[in-house]
Length: 295
Image (cartoon, rainbow, N blue to C red; front, side, top):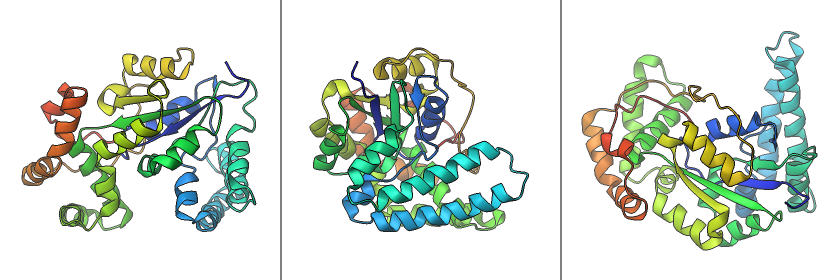
């Protein structure tokens, strides 16, 4: 093992278990994860918008400081840590050598722990050259790509976007249907890109050595076998997981059958890609009611 810890990066997908995995690894005694799950560094570096990310972090700090100042926050230590990490990240974004500053941020305080991580799903959309640069950040850098039943992931993503509109509860179904129509009409490029498992996997395959990347299905992640696969891949000792725990549960809303059929047609290439590459998971073929939601 090298003196520096293993660095883990996540290639998504959004609404496919990345928050659950981050939560699990945050509690692992051999892992050192900062309190900001999605650092959003390399995507902003690629876009030339690190200063914008720094301003955004400043906006996040304000409400946390207010909560801490009330004198009765639920987890004062955790909130104080989130404030400190965001303040440090602001300096990373504005540093003369931001990559070196980011590396320090990621590993600072790790001590003898074996793993650090940045679970930013957007990294799956980065070009191959940037993925290769990330893979050279530390001597041992690894990637995980989580995939979920494409229709279930899409509907969860749509509902997440709907929740962000802060519409009235009685309007939620109508607004969600409108968001879905935007996706079908090609007016939600971000959702389209994140739904393209084949393209994300192709970039990872070109950029990252086979032994340094792991592909997993969301439906199998939160099982004893799934957790064992993750810890084995990362070189971590077995550690109990709260398999029943759900993180960032979405607003419950069953997907109408008509929308589901259209989504299945739209996403047919993704089902075909997974079937040809790994075999279609039984859980996908079953097409459950699509009510269980985690990020």
